[in-house]
Amino acid sequence: MMFPVYTFDYDTGIYTGIRLLDITDADPRAPGVILMPGNTTTVPPPYCGRGLFPVWRDGEWVVCQRAPDFNLDADYYAHL
Image 1 (cartoon, rainbow, N blue to C red):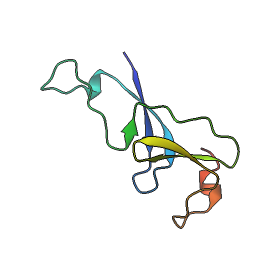
Image 2: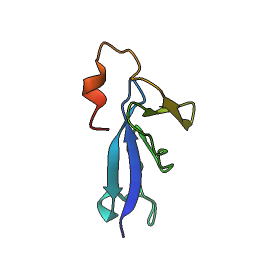
Image 3: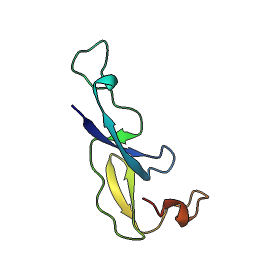
Image 4: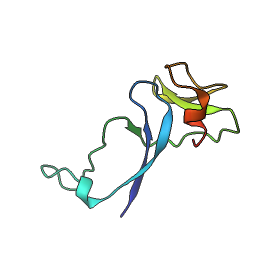
């Protein structure tokens, strides 16, 4: 069975994509438990139109009207 999680950048919190976890992500010491990688959440990001960016902050998605300024220009985020 595949289990979707949503990934975000460690420094910026900006949504970076979806990852599917499966049996290979299981905890070998706890049968039936799937290990969550860092910088992931089971909460899907909200739909964002052009020029809006989902950002993970304080345990929830926040929609930003422009890319947060982390020395990266907005074109870097255009594919998100």
